[in-house]
Amino acid sequence: MESFELYVFSFQLFSFDLCSFAARLLVACELVLGLGLISGIWRRTINWLCAATLGGFSLFLMWRIILGDDSSCHCFGDVLDMNPWQSLLKNAVLALLLFLGWKAPEHDIADFFCSRFPKFRTSVCRILIACLLSAASFTAVFAICPPSFYHRWTSRTQNLSQELWQPFSDDFGYSEGNHIVLFFSPLCEHCQHCAAKVNSILARHDLDHSRIHVVFMDLYDDPSIMDRAIPYFYEQAGIDELPFDSHKISYEDMIPMTDGVIPLVCLFADGRLVEEYSYSTLDESVFSDFVR
Image (cartoon, rainbow, N blue to C red):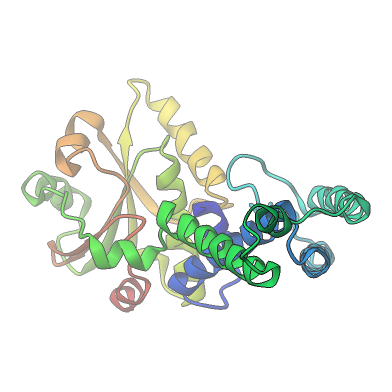
């Protein structure tokens, strides 16, 4: 879900919170359509909605191809990367399966239910089943992976030890002025998502990158391995170049400093910690106002 919501946000049309909600809404609607196909209720309507959904997604993919975008749409999250051409082929296969299903013998779970409980009317039963399936779909999606603003409302990140960080802050020159420091591990997938999110926020608001600094947890005794790991980190995050200046801190120092929690996004004013966020709780408006 993190990859998909970042992809939606990458178009920079809406705030991250709205994109986070929209990404889950889309997944929930797809789940409703899938359960509708399985249940067989209102078969013709569901089939047409599935066809319209496939057609809409295919037109979107064609638009991305025309613009020269060959990046994955993350419809499988991080499990499988597919470029627009591959996704179009996948949609063609799904369209064929939909056609075969359209021609298959009809079934309706409402008829099955009403045949055993004749007191229920079939039309009423269909409505009840549709409401239950819809409620279950939306509840499952939003409960398993709540949107970003839910995490911000229900939790507060307080993991950084300022006492342990202060000597490094002085050495790196972050003790004066406003600075945002991102604490990452080069092997952490969530850190990669966080870097992509921060980079998209900066691009959306046309903000200066010079106030953003990355502190990587150094995991290797050989410095050359870390020098290769950092560019690979940004490549995996979908960032073409190294956008932020960076420093390295040994894992022996980083783990107690962050209480073992990464990624962390920390806002400092003259060396004083003003706000602290995780990937899930990062507030776009506070972040962008602080950089300005």
